[in-house]
Amino acid sequence: MNRSSDLKGRLLPVRIYGDQILREKSLPVEEINEEIRGFVQDLIITMYEKDGIGLAAPQVGNNIRIFVVDPEWYRTGKKNPTVFINPKFISMSGVDVQEEGCLSLPDITAEVKRADSVVIEAYNLEGKMMRYEATGLFARAIQHEYDHIDGILFVDRISKLKLLSLKWKLKELEKHKDRNGVNIDTYFTDKENDIHRDT
Image (cartoon, rainbow, N blue to C red; front, side, top):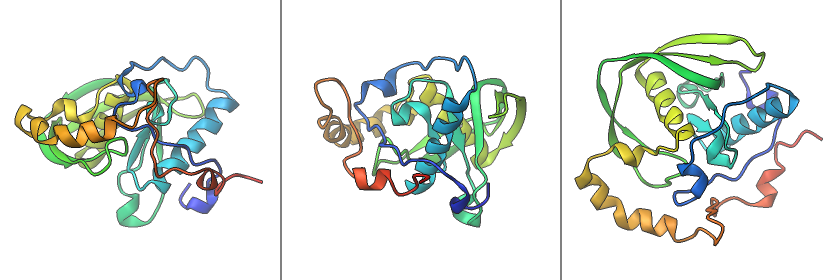
């Protein structure tokens, strides 16, 4: 999978800060079937179309333990997503502090302390258990997306002073949620939803 034209799927609406699903711990995937594979394709399409380097299932309203990561595609132009299903950290080491953003927190960035190196196991789309040793941006993206499936956002990991400075932006995002606790990206349109549909 190295070109967006190779990918089939739908662009999904991204859930925004204040949406209740972003605060829920996701459920394990019981079976990697065609429905799951189709959903992952949609997740990958959405990540690229929204210019993200990672995206987790809860961010598009699906409360399951799946995320996708591709930290280098925007620099290299080559799309090579890695799929993580029911991931589990084996080890973490080192400390790295870098600025992060998130598709679910548009226009908000802050420095976040993460492990510099991680070892993680997860199933791929073929149901095979894979082990990844990651450092740098790949490790950071994995940790960021893993947080999402545990109901954690990067603003939970920043200093109290920085969080205080962002309060008004967070309240502005949160005020758009509906009475069911749903807060969908206002930039999403039904027309966008069909641009990559396989017809």
